[in-house]
Image 1: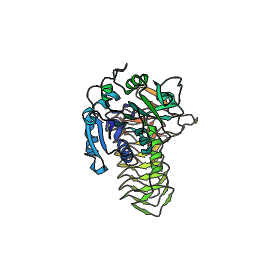
Image 2: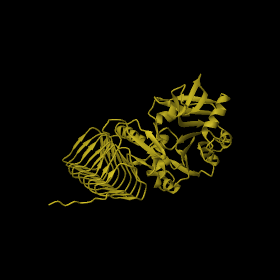
Image 3: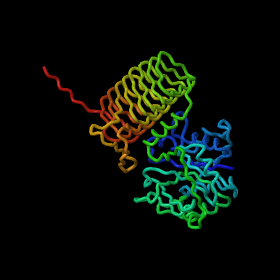
Image 4: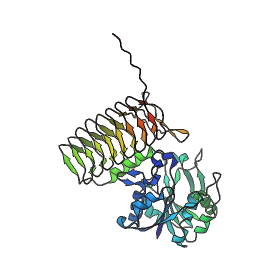
Amino acid sequence: MKAVVLAAGEGKRMRPLTFTRPKCMIPIAGKPILEHVVGEVKSAGVKDIVIVTKYMEELVKAHFGNGSKFGVKIRYATQGDRYGTAAAFASAEKFVDGEEFLGIAGDIITEASAIRKVLKGNGKVAMGLKPVENPSKYGVVKLRKGLVSEFVEKPAKPESNLVNTSIYLFGKNVMSELKNAPKTERGEYEITGVIRKLAAMQQVTGVELSEYWMDIGMPWQFLDASGHIISKMPAKKKGKVENSTLKGKVIVEQGAHVFNSYIEGPAYIGKNSEVGPFVYVRPTTAIGENCSLSSGTTIKNSILMDHVYAKHLTYIGDSIVGENCNFGAGTQVANYKFDASTVRMKVGETLYDTEKKKLGVLIGDNVKTGVLACLMPGKTVGDGCWVGAGVLVNKDIPRNTKVFVKQELEFLR
């Protein structure tokens, strides 16, 4: 059995994080999303993996190599000029050569047991299905006696709560169907068209899953996925902990140093990071490698990537912070609105209701803030930005922008 893992897309809705890495390489608890997927595929018993790449593919190849350090065999297929999931799977044709194979998206978080269930499916295609509360956000599937009878993408009025998980078992010789997928209105070649065609011929089975599953389609969903992954990791303290309280499950990686601080798990502290003195880390926080936090800083339910520095009275709540960011003294990243309403965030040109009452800021790589800067809930700061001292960020800031407040002093005698 081989697995074909899709990792070709940029992930435009994840900008500014994806200006500097593909979506599948955004880290959660010390590993890129794609590494979590590869790990679960391996645990499901599939160790011969083809990763389909395109956008910034050199970063994927540099991280995974031939797969030997992950205990699997990895080869690569580059997606061509045809876009869409069916075209992406078809890119791996020479590797599967008429065999059945596992197909899975490289940006979902799930469990090996779910993958194993799909691998036991039958038909020309078997697809994993998950019941969810808000199916209108996904591809919705109707089942009749175990067979897929209808597949509708993001219907306004869903007739089922079962959604497509992007985990498939493709039967022998299905590659011709993938190569001849119909073009959508967006000009792409999607798996949905293939599923509809084969479902009409009663050749698609549905496998209902009860395991955890998260399709990370929006930035704030990273925080949910991160919390789940940290909660499932075994507690370990390879690093050094001194004069600190660690409450609940806390992972302290090799070379990390925690001292004179209070950590509430579940929490993850990456390799060679320094936490202390007087740092409060609240659940469910993931701190990357080579970070430095100290002097009254509080981090709550956030993802900090590598080389983040917040040393003096900084608060970061419910936020995602890219690599190489430095927070000036007293920087406050707000996560709650006065009226207690849900936070809205602009993704691309669309303003979304995140349905979260607590959500902070999405910050790209290489951002600096000056002393007493304040960032308001639901805003985005592009990579390479400077936010000057005393600036109140109440608008999204485009990448590579320097923002300063103009102040006029008045002297009275």
